[in-house]
Amino acid sequence: MLENLSSRLSRVIKTMRGQARLTEENTREMLREVRLALLDADVALPVVRELVSRIKQKALGEEVIANLNPGQALVGVVERELTQIIGGDLPAQEREINLSVQPPAVILLAGLQGAGKTTSAGKLAKWLIENRGKKVLTVSADVYRPAAIEQLKTVSAQAGADFFPSEVGQKPLAIARSALDHAKRHFYDVLIVDTAGRLAIDEAMMQEVSDLADFLNPAETLFVIDAMLGQDAVNTAKAFNERLNLTGVMLTKLDGDSRGGAALSVRMVTGKPIKFVGVGEKLDGFEAFNPEQMAGRILGMGDIVALVKDVQKAVDIKEAQKLAKKIKSGEKFDLEDFKAQISQMKNMGGLSGLIDKLPAQFQEAAGRVNDKDAERALRRTEGIINSMTPKERRNPDLIKASRKRRIAAGAGVSVQEVNRLLKQFEQTRDMMKKMQKGGMAKMMRALGGMGRMAGFGGFGRR
Image (cartoon, rainbow, N blue to C red):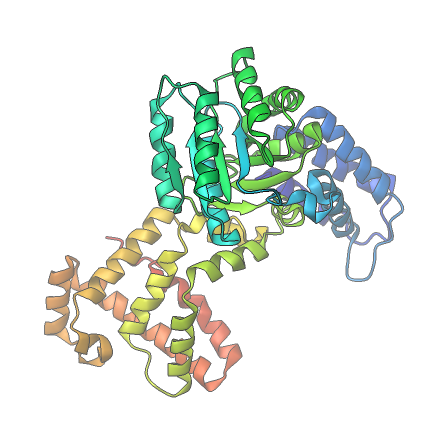
């Protein structure tokens, strides 16, 4: 997102070395690059002017502290102002979802058709169940698209939430009344209401969602908007903000385009906090919005906090501790352990989502990894290991020529691929030995070959 800004800033930083302070002269070029990058990212012009003005005001005369050059100091100013403009100026409690009401807390989702409301309803339900421990009910008031009702039913089941049925032909207000009554009688903590959208703003749609909001008196009315909408985001945001008492914004499809200027425009136009962001179709691609972390990602500094959380969710801590204990006791790292590590990698989902959270200097190299190729390589690796006997997995040294041929035939691969896997396994085992001996420097050097474990070094290619 806004990767253009990151690359432009990097180029200008190199030209500003050796100067003692930020002046109007040496910041002019940097501010020009910031302005062009924001406009290229479809950020609304009033927002660009405001942000550039604030950066200029704060930057001029700022001392360049030790270990920083003027370019790096200016990036610090840009980061601070960017953080403020996307919500860092708000108290933390205002950026969080409000559930401090008499249950059920009603969350109304509003937005244009195609913004991702229905998928977001499932993602939000899953997030509330896993992160807040809530009992969640969903309902669709979109009586114009039968597919939308079925889609909400499906994603609700995947999220672990209950679904209140509705049908084409019913009145949205009647659906809302029945769902709210059901939620009260069955002691639900949260009721998520998915509303109908249109391909463009029209009076009938606005009146319908306004009537729903008046009746439901929701704890949260979230405006769901596609991050790729660009300049149109401003007009859409204004229209919804004028008719509804919006409490926050949910940005979707942040992974869909390198622009994503809506993240900046919508916050400033509505004055409402961005509360959640979504990426991809999978229900796990959803997180509470954090201005500081988002500013870091926009500027190419990465979002290591979010990356660590992703890894923590995917990794089985007990299994990791068990392996650490095994290595520490001097036991051999075998192919069963190797397979377990591959399973952990698969649980992390698509690699592109993880790479997006790395700092910019690592993204270029990591970006050469293709999601599909990597996942295919992991599956082939698992297939080869599954073709081995338990005895062979526990003692790989037994695997000689005849066994390799049998394993290859069972996995549907060539003997050369079995040899490559065994070589990668040996490299990983060597690294584990270095860890056991405490040779941290040696271990770090060995980490260079870890990527090949998943097939990134050519495994699986024919």
